[in-house]
Image (cartoon, rainbow, N blue to C red; front, side):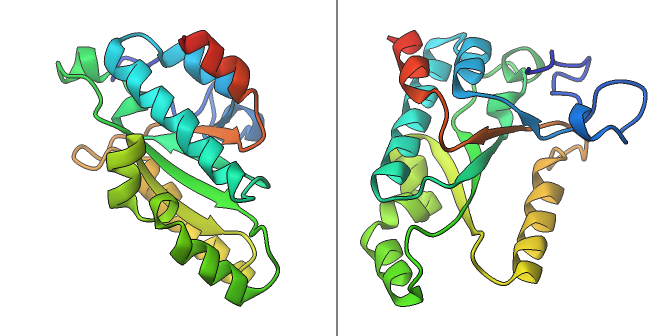
Length: 182
């Protein structure tokens, strides 16, 4: 379930009286259908959601299927009301296992598919400011990457306001979500 925006126009960082309840804290586990139903409220948002679904399909097409994505940025805020503008993109961090065990094959896959791993390209092509965390690297590096992205995504950059984000599995109901956009 995606919580309603709080008075500051952001997803709350947690639900209930305390941030200690694991099931009631950000990132909130949701499906793509929930994301579409909640955020497909304007032409600009529908355009971004279409790009997001295309990006997710492209990841799966190269074998990146075992993982999840954190969604954040102004896309998951009430920017139309709070800043009087539409969102330009959606911020994403994909946490996933490599589709291949060989480090050399993985490097080749990344270099052959930069359109999935270079944020400048993903932003232009899919309207996704997208980053990748390799869940097959050393655990302390995964923890460090997670710390970095959670710290960045859980607060507004300019105001430092604490806010929530969403978590969507790579294997979700994307086909149904896409049909809702059409």
